[in-house]
Image (cartoon, rainbow, N blue to C red; front, side, top):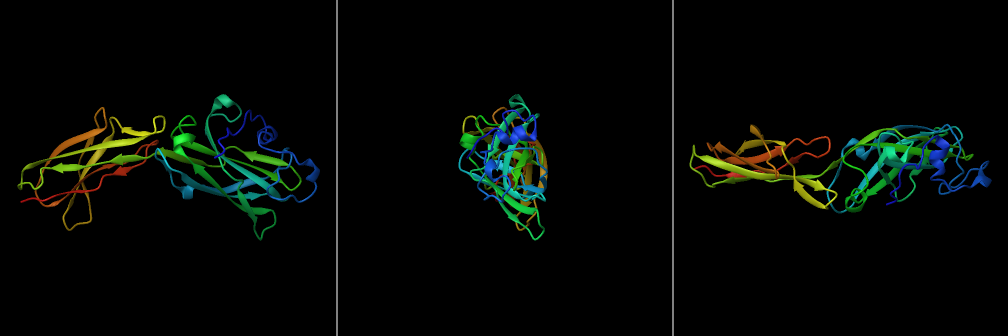
Length: 273
C-alpha cells in the first residue's frame, strides 16, 4: 500500500495535489489517458455520493489484509482524467502536525463516465495491512476521505473532507459456564475475557473496565435475555455468578465503543438436572 500523508502542506488545492502529481502539461488541452497525471492547478471538480466500506465500520485485527472499497461520484464539465483517494486522520490537513494518519491506495481509482456528460462513477480500493499500516500511522476512531482530481485540461481540484469513516480495533470475547452439568437452583460461575487488537504490539490485549452483558438463551429458544451487566477487570477478565434454573446457553456480549468493534462470545451450554 502507498502510505502517504495526504499532503505535506495543504495550503491550497494546487499545493495539495502538487504533492501527488506528475506533470504532463503538454497534454493540457487534450483528453489524456486515465493513468497520466496532469499538472496541478485549481479546478472545479465536485465530489458527491461518497460511501466508504459500504457504510460499515472498518474493523482491523492485527494481521492479514483488509480490502476497503470506496465509491463516489465526480462531476466536472471539463471531463475528468484522473482522481486520487486517501483516508486521513487529524484536525488540520494544511499542516503535517495536524495529520495523525494517512492511508493510500495501491492503484489509482477507476472512474467511468455515465450517460450524463461530465459525471463519473468512481471506485477506489484500499488494501489495509494493520500489522504495518496502523502501527505508527494513525489510531482508531474517525477518519476523513480526501478526494482529488484533474480534469481533461489539467486543472486540479480537491476536497479533504468528502465524508468520514470509522476505523475500529477488532475485539474477541469468550464465555465458559461451570459446573456443567449442574443441579437445578444451584449457582454457576461464568468466566470470560474481552480482548482487542493492539496495533503497536501486533497482539490482542485485555480491554480494561468495559461493560459487558451476561446473557442467557433457553434451550429451544432463539432469543437471548440479558441477566446482568458487569465490567472487565484490570486484565480484561470477566467473572460472575447466576442461578441455573433450566437448560440453556450463557454468553457475554460487548456493545463496542467508538474505537473498538462489538464482540459476542459463543453460547456455552449448561445442562440442568
